[in-house]
Length: 272
Image 1 (tube, one colour):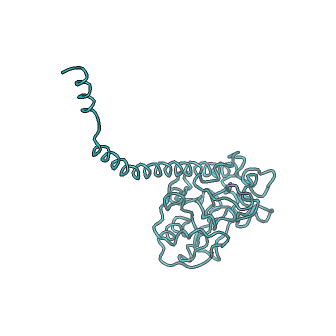
Image 2 (image 1 turned 60 degrees about the vertical axis):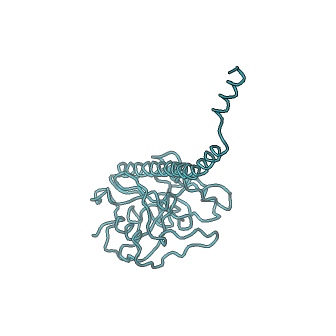
Image 3 (image 1 turned 120 degrees about the vertical axis):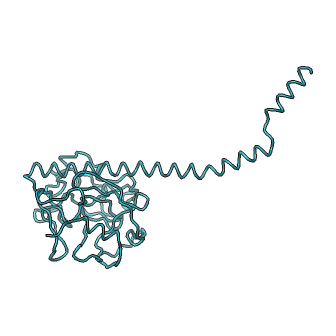
């Protein structure tokens, strides 16, 4: 056998047939959706970890404020942050067009907003106030909102519930007996978030006041008084209404038999 015949023989043995190439292409096409799904899950995990990390920083600042104030909890009044009679941990009102949506001073500048931004001296950065997966863009500025989180309405001086309650309103750290089961901050729905006060009503289990977000695989970042954070997965499709631009959500309505809302209320406070 001469050199030329040996060369062509080896080349032919190492080449792919049309059938083999077709098989490889089919395999790659089948593999692509799996790879994309894995990438999406990794991104979801990254944003979820970022959200939980931010909320842990918020809880740490919240606890530091209490330590510096003889155990008193930071003010948490609904529609607050603008006057001495209406103090709140953050100032401002978030909706589709208000400039408050992008005003970081309302979160961290306590000197400029003396009845809001109480946690600013303990954080010094606006980034922990926002979930990384919150991509809501304000219509006025075409920029992302600076805050995604709201605080449980059962925590904080000047906070309140809906009417007379059979449940505790925590105003001091020494009142809290089960810090690992009581949630403090939560991702709030884009159209439900307004002030920094997230309302539930255990006295009326089927009453819906505010709605959680679903930034993490139909779940919300949520942090607890003891400092740990988690992604709380929702199971009822009524828990997170669809986003409808320029149409406010109906708040203060009744939805019966929703286990997600029952969970939020059960972990919001304790009986007196």
